[in-house]
Image (cartoon, rainbow, N blue to C red; front, side, top):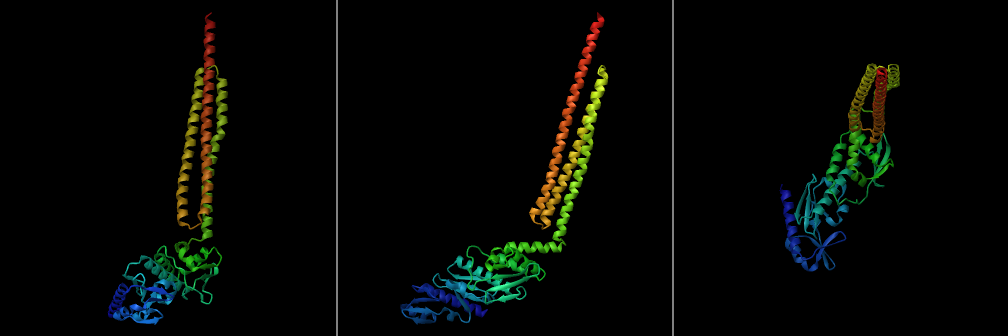
Length: 397
């Protein structure tokens, strides 16, 4: 606790010096002030070294043994091992000091520089990921001569993760949360093979990927690894499930074919019924009562035929509802590529649609023919009644 208080006191002292001095510049790898402001350095006990007409402020020596990094060259100052230690980031020009703890917690002193805070968070996230990937528990070989981390995946083979000696750090958005999420998820030993495989997939099977690309695609990598791991937990084998998908499709096809067979079985009776009605009409064309009975019988047949077809249509609709529910579950849980599921789904949708259209055509045809037959019988009745009327008149004479 006393060390922390002593460090905070030094930070306060340096900030007072920043406020009092007139001009601070950063050149090369150090901060400088004009030589005529030497007395201010003495006042606050800050070490310095004369260099020509300027004085080099020895801020790192002032805070020793605490590590100090200069903000203008931060990406080259911070090293992978530094993130496990407490250190300070100093921007003397903007009068900002940020303390970074061993747990990567940040405290800002002086002027609030949100851009610098974001930059530090992202550098720390970058090196946390770098340290995780090159760790022997994850990476198989660290080729520091070529700036490569070599990974071996039993499913995908060998690929390489490249990195820069002085990294290019994202300064637009905070990447720390998604990096921590990715590391947290990939940390368990049983998940690491899936994580390695997911990284290889993101490389588009090229076998080499920059670490910045992993940062950019961290969410996709995590989701891919989770999906593959969950499929194994659920004992879903990709090919087995794909075969199950095809069997499910055939089951729906079988149900639809059975209904189509029934529909055509009913359709065969249409010409027979019409022929019987016409023949009966011809035989009893002079008996109005029998003609009315023939017409009534045919209308009842048409009614029942339409009723049966509507029942078949209802059965098709139930199959369609079951199919939509089942395929929604398949799409959400199977992990199969959407294009495969969608292709099989489209085949069943087309089959259902064509069956319903055929039902509509048959029902419309039967109703139309029923009307024609009814009109024909009414026509025969009219002729029969006319002949009877004429015969009655002639008999009266």
